[in-house]
Length: 549
Image (cartoon, rainbow, N blue to C red; front, top):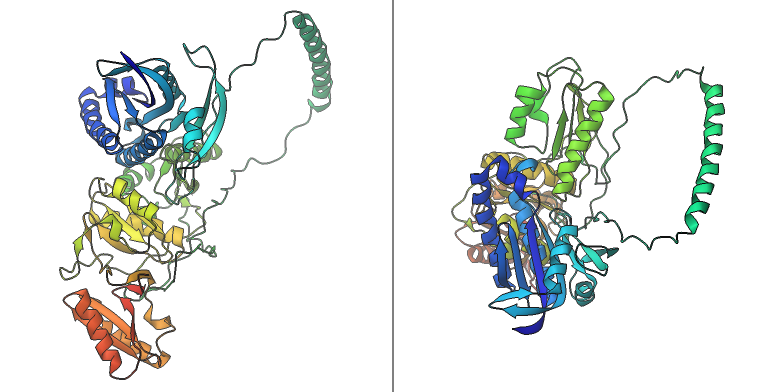
């Protein structure tokens, strides 16, 4: 036997026994699939699995930084895989990490370090990560990760409380979820001599409170409430308010020089359906076809009281056959928010409909004109996260860990300010495209475009220059006003490789329907040089471009 210091990683499935009891074969099959993901991440992070038992995984890492980074990658990847399943069938892990002195015997590790990691795993939230203070001290200034200090925790079979921290998991928009604080270790018991005093004080207070309540009841017992019962008002989400759809051509979207924060748009409410009329199923945004089928077959035909809630991330909740309208509202929002919280969605749920009447105040999300996806063998190429335009490295990593491994059909929609949204595991490409465009449009406040479908880029992706925004011919300041309509007409349907160049006088030159990017660029520069000087390329495909440096 030999001793060593190691970062110990412990993972376990939350509610594993229930999952097995409900469907053993399917649970074991998915466990094997999820274990492949976990094992691969651990190996890539220089970790070593030293023990497994059922649904548990124990691994060691040479550093706490490697262990925490690996745990975050695992949780983000598995969270996305879970989105294809209903909440009751999602397979979520808890992970605990500590640094400790362990004993190695025949490849296995033993000691307090292993035991503490297992206890920290039990403290973690479902889909979350809990680490010891030693780990926090090692990684706090080395990883862009936020922590919530939950203080000293009493854990089973460990004599001293363990000071622990929750890792705040990153959401889709780059913000962080706030972990729920666990119960802090109990303070030392009060001396025995204090109990008579405490009992006496409590008794006196109880007598005083009882007398007050008795006389208060006498004064108010005959008063009847005259306030009419009214349903609670849906509180607007702190997310940006989506605007109504703006008429915009996908061949000429609004330009932007860098990712920017969206200004709140003025909401324009939908025309609500009559409370006793047919529920407008086809108008409900953000949801997939399976949920739309539920609305058609079950929600629409159910009697009052009922309510439906959703958020722009595509999470939903419903309540049917409730005792009152208020109960239905609260139950629908609560169900939706639990689903959103379980997936760490940053968006709040709101009431969409009460009965068959739409009460959602934000209107329809801005959408581009159809077709949303146009296939062109000249410009399509295999999807590669590192080449995705206008996104930061952090977002590209998410695409690699989440989108690239997710079930089909899947799409990524991109907004003019660098906003993006992934729709995964949809029933069809059209369903995935609609959902990603609706959610992206609601976040961005303007129409987005589909950049990737399954494993293919479906728009021209510049490689010679850097994409910095959407190219909107009609308002681009580099092109003189009297030439813009002609550029729009010549670009036409936007098929093939297209490039636009301008010179000092703002006279545009075009390279249209070229067979490759370089040919389009050369054609645009040559055309511009015929009637202007010092020409440079300002657009390739649907993107405004700038030098790579």
